[in-house]
Structures are given as structure tokens and as C-alpha cells.
Length: 140
Image 1 (cartoon, rainbow, N blue to C red):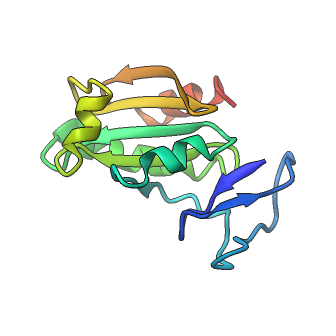
Image 2 (image 1 turned 135 degrees about the vertical axis):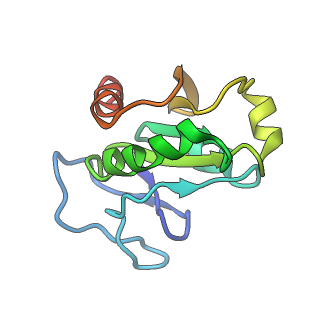
Image 3 (image 1 turned 135 degrees about the horizontal axis):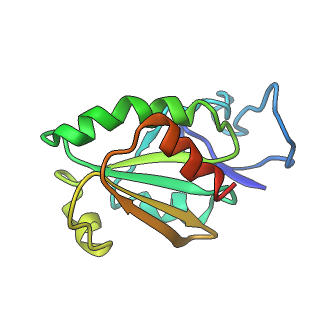
């Protein structure tokens, strides 16, 4: 399966398994098991979403948004539960207004889940860690 390196954003082919003890990027040699959400921009959004064989969950947020700040730690905690199962990414709508407009983001935080490069689900509003994990499990 194709997965995106969280460090250099290159595409890697990784055998599909139930769990992984080690998986390193072929380009930068860093761990593919890194789960910290990746910040995306208009220049790399499509490449990351289209080239990922695992579901991609996108958090559209802004630094001035109170609910976004509350959900941020929950998003990171949930990401740590899904190494090489789901890719967690963030889009700062303040900096990336074109992406916000392209996806008709009307309120933040908004979460979008992509599979095979296509949007399959969207939810607006802050989620707690349990709700977020439950959401991600629906698409794994």
C-alpha cells in the first residue's frame, strides 16, 4: 500500500499488515510510524490525499478558533492510535483560504475524511477523543 512519509511527504510502498514494529521512509529514512498530524498547504494537499492508500482525515482549523484549540490535542491523541492505518493532516484555513473555499468550509473545525482521493465523510464541530476515534474506525 502507498503511504505518505510524515517527515518528507514522499510516497512509500509498505506491505499491508495488522501492526508494524518498524517502517522507515525510503527517501529520508525516518520512521513512517510517526503519528503527529502533518500541516498541509495548497501546494501539497492533492499530492498527499491522492497518493495515500490509507484514509486521510483532514482537520480544517484556524489559530483564533477556540473549539479548534480544544480539539487539537484530541486530534493528536487519536492520530497516535492509527500509525499506518489513517493519515492525520491539518489545514490552517487562515493561511490556506483557497483550500477552505475549494472545500466549502463554512465553519471550523471541520473534519473531512478522504479515501482513494475522494471525500467520503464530513463533520463540523469539535470532537472529543472518543468520538474522533470512533469516527476514524468507521473508515479503517
